[in-house]
Image (tube, rainbow, N blue to C red; front, side):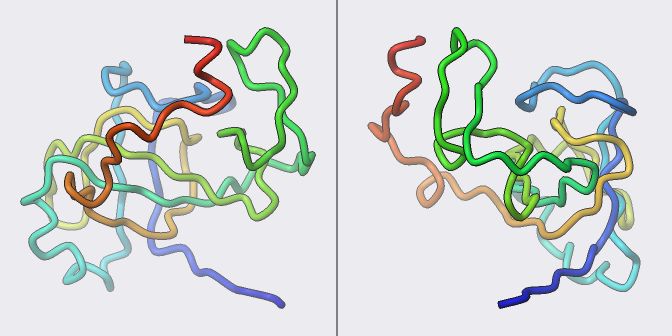
Length: 145
């Protein structure tokens, strides 16, 4: 089945060619999202949240392996779905970032692990009692911590 998504904006980061493997809240540089102006009303009350979940498209990732070798794993091989690799089968990325401020259709955030000019797919509020799962564990990473 074919599923189509349309970009609703653009993510801007200081990363032109390489991005970190995970978002860093205190990363240096400017991180912001420009939401297409036609979706301005969709930002209503978003500024009441401290964190947001940003979904985006890894438009420059072409590797579609079913296994990954995560950084800091000592070369461990895991299945793609057990990793946070940007080389996704459908190229969907997700970051939970601190919402710093919103000016018109521009959302300023903490660090993201997306490249500059990455297509934005969606934004959702991070809601503490829904999105935090105490005791969820760290899967295979528990051996690395």
